[in-house]
Image (cartoon, rainbow, N blue to C red; front, top):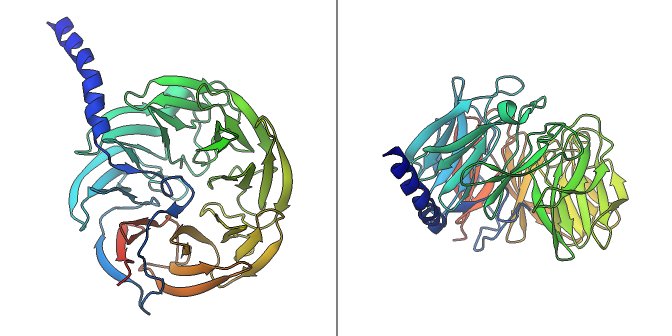
Length: 409
C-alpha cells in the first residue's frame, strides 16, 4: 500500500508543479529587475505638506527590518515575535490572512528578521538570520520544504546574521551559505530544495549580499559578493567566471551591483567607498575604471539614471550625484543623508535612516527635492527599503507596515 501511495505522489508531482506555476503572483527584491526601478505610472509629482494619504497600516509585525513583498493578490512580510520569525500575509486593505512561524530569529546584533520574501508562481522563499531557508505556500503559509545552512552546508553566520534576499531564475533558487569549502554558493531546485549545483566561489564567508543576474554580450552571469570580493558565476553550473578584490576588510556588502553596457558598479560598506569595473568583451575578466570615497552605505543601494549615479554615503552623511563613466562628483548635499532609495516614473523615493521620506527629481548635474514627510516612529533604524505597487508606497518601520496612496489625482 505504501509503495502504491508513493507512486501516486510521484505521478502527481508534475501536475502539482503546473498548478503552482499557474499562480502568477510574483514579487522580487527591489523591483522586477532588482534595480530599484518600479514600472508604475500615474503617480503624484508633489505630495501634500503632511505627506501622501495613509491608506492603512498594520501594527503587529514584531521586530524586523524587511520590506513588503507585494503582489496583485496579497502583501507578504516578515517579523519577529518573542524569539520566533514569522511570515505574515495581508490583503490589500491590511487584514491579516495568515501568519506562519518559520524558525528562531537572529538575537545578536540588531535582533529581528532581515530577509524579505521573494514570491513566484504560488511559492514564497525566505531566510532567517540564523540560516534556515524555507519555501512556503503563498495561499496558506504552509512550509513546503526547508534547509538549515548551518547544519547541511557548514555555514557560519556573519556578524549581523544572514540577510540575503534570495534570487529565483526559472526552476532554480540561488543562495549563499558561505561555506569556505564546497558549499559557498548554491543553486537549489525551488520546488524541493535539492542541490542542482554547488560552487566553492573564492572560499569566503557570506557578506549580506543579494545576488543578481546580468547579461553581458548575450551571456548570463550570476553576480554577488562574499566577504572581500565581488564575483561572477555561470548560473547554469556554478563555475567561477571572475572575481575581484573589493579592498575592504569589514565584509559588509548588502547592496546589489549595477550593470550597464559592460560596466559594473559595486559598493563597499562603511568608509571604503565604491568601485566601477569594466568587463572584458568575452566577460571572463574585469578591470577597475575608477574608485570613489562616496556610496559607502552598508545598505540602501543607489540608482543609475541617465549618465549619473544617485545615492547616499555613510561616512560623509550626504546624498550625491556622480558621473557613471568617470566617477566625477557633480553634486553632494547633506539635505537627505543616508537613505534607501528606489525610483518610479523618473523620480527618486528616498527613505532616510532618520525616518524622513523624500520625493526627489534627478537632474543632469544635481537633484531637486520636490516633497517630503516624516514617517511615524523614533528617529532610529528606518532602514527597510520602500516598495511601490499599484500606485501605493509601502514603508516598513519596526513592527509597522504603512501604506500610502501616491496615485495622481
